[in-house]
Image (tube, rainbow, N blue to C red):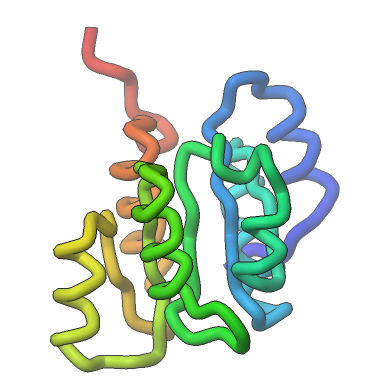
Length: 145
């Protein structure tokens, strides 16, 4: 994955109206690499170290998509999904996890998640899920007219 850097930040700033993707993961390296990857292709990526930090940021709920780690200290990604649903928030969610239990994945998807991806992540799978969640065309694709 691409490390976060100034080019990604510049691209996001140069593309007003670019879809906003929040990354909620307690692992610094995962959060930074996903932020860098998404910024490098033009997304407005916003990292959060916890579900609590995400919820404490009012405009985070206005994002186009959120990538959530399932297992985090404090409020888990699944708990955050429940909180958002109870508030009537329909923010598209992409879950990432090291857990492989199909019952967990099924539950998250039944509650409206766009995808539940198993770590280690494959870049194309993640980008496909984010593009589906934000309804944005993949880089190099043109929107249907």
